[in-house]
Image 1 (cartoon, chains in turn orange, cyan):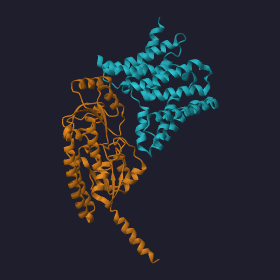
Image 2 (image 1 turned 90 degrees about the horizontal axis):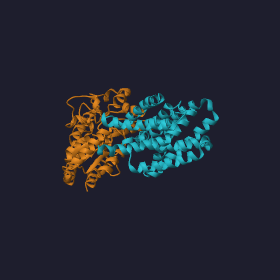
Image 3 (image 1 turned 180 degrees about the vertical axis):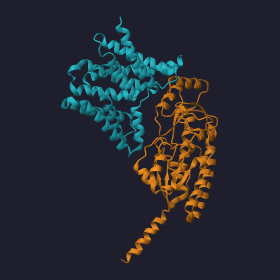
Image 4 (image 1 turned 120 degrees about the horizontal axis):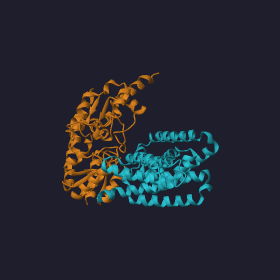
Length: 297
Length: 247
């Protein structure tokens, strides 16, 4: 009986040790939250690196995790449109609903590319707020980290100092890494590439790659033979060095153009966990740039 | 025009290879009333690939193909058993086999997410992406299957037929996708159902016209290739026999 107060205090302590339950939609935001919150949070990742984040099924386990979450960290910009609204609605968790303090969209912290002037769903997977694949530009992690740290401090003021410290450390390391990556990738500037889908505008914008053609302009829909002959025409006039695809995608379209146009097919990790080298955020870009440089040779 | 031919020719050859086995098999499948057997077999082959992924064997493509073929053969044995034991309700059992295999796939994939993407790739092969090595491998398999089929035919028995069928489907689904496999099996066989003379000639005419017109439509009207071939084949299946029967 004497042990009961002891057990209770232990329980209180252990729950205090994990102040925040974070539900991350994609591995890159789980990794960033880990950098900023360290041991102050329990982080769950809803999608795996080798999974298309556009299309997953809402499972009971996702709903259960969302129910317990204090903070949902997602890309936003309609990337998770197919499953996240259902998961959040079914969770019945009022803290993490869109617009609330417990709902964080990384896309709202960065400048969006490919924002359509006219919205027409007939053009395929068009996102009204712009292209959501913001994680391929390493520079985007600085504003997202600042905004996310701000949110963590707001939700968990007791650990404010720790978040501030982690953010400062991350920013310093990231700036140093950015300088290193940009130096390594200097030779990639102006290099012409083909992309398998419209998933790399931020990467191209960052490193100065020139996208000359897209193999599958409408994701999930096979292209027409007419479109592919246009792509071949384009490549005749503007030869490209390589064709890029994300690790979760089927290799066949890339292999197809790679054999025909005699260019390198480069598979990029796309997010943390997408390749053996991409174990964390730093590894993600180390590996991405190494693979691009190999493709150019 | 040259550029388009270099895109269309491999796809058209893939279509011809698929038709070479699927027209005789389709006629047999229609006659036996087991038209959904192809869906069941393809799904079971896909299930094999998910198992391979769970065992961590996906790095070796040849091994993956062997596992897919072995699973398809196991599926063939199951279908043969069904047809022998419950001939009156075999269609119900075959449909059930398809649903059970598909659902087992969903259950297994909830443990291994990448397998889901892989299974999708396996079942929705896209005809425009075929490459030379795929064409050569499928040509060799097709030749072997046709030799066995022509040598034994009626003497193959339940399992023999389903085994050939399963191997043909496993290859063709990856080459052109499940919709085109179904259409190539059923449309030519169905369109020439009442034909007594030269049935093979008309069936191949329907199939080849379908692939040719479908691919051209994909160029001219900027349409997804697989889906336009399915419709072109159906339309040629409707019109070609009607045109010829007037003479």
